[in-house]
Image (cartoon, rainbow, N blue to C red; front, side, top):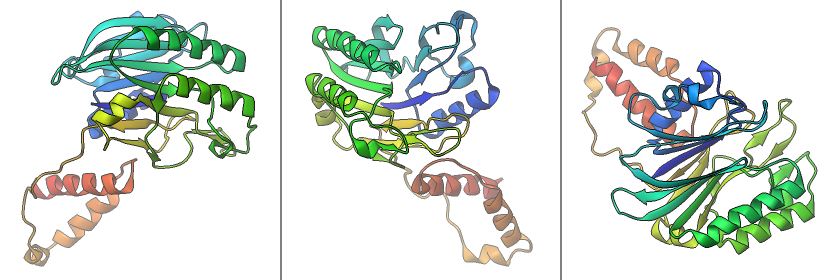
Length: 287
């Protein structure tokens, strides 16, 4: 199961929905967690613009004024929801993986800015953590860091980090190493950086998927970078077609390849971008 989490600072933008839909397709996303939707009447909003034509289910918490708001979208062919629990600062979608029948609780978190309120949210989540069976995956904008190295040019409060770490330990959660960069939040002026967004999983989840990966992607239309948790390993299979050097003897072929290589654009890790570029160029050549 592949999960994508992003603080979008509002969802009413075609550029944002096109960006997220592209990431959803590129990374094979089965569960999408959006924070800060800024939607007060989410029942009238068309979330399919983020997901595309494939079937999906959705759970939302409306914002209060222009502050907050959460949305979860998922593929019912991969994850079957049984119960949903709503809070202003988090949504818990509880169900099971269709293929394996594994019970799992997926939590979309948008923690408040106020430190005391955040600690209250940790306590509320702990209540569910202690009462619901199954594996746990928590994702989102936790608005806190775990140590001083996760902030740059912004204030680090040791007491807040200690409270956050105490919650993580008490809940029996761990993290995968995050690739793609050390920070997920970048201020509008580009000077302040923090790791506010993350995935926290229970030990049972990591035992089931020890080779899962977490990657922070490039930001485009938000001050937060999207983060992806992937348990489905990329497999590009056999080479789909053969390329012969003699093709370069065809008039205009080299110019065609160079022109298309120069036009390719993709936001993501370099190794994945290269694989996508080869796939894209292959289609151009075949057509």
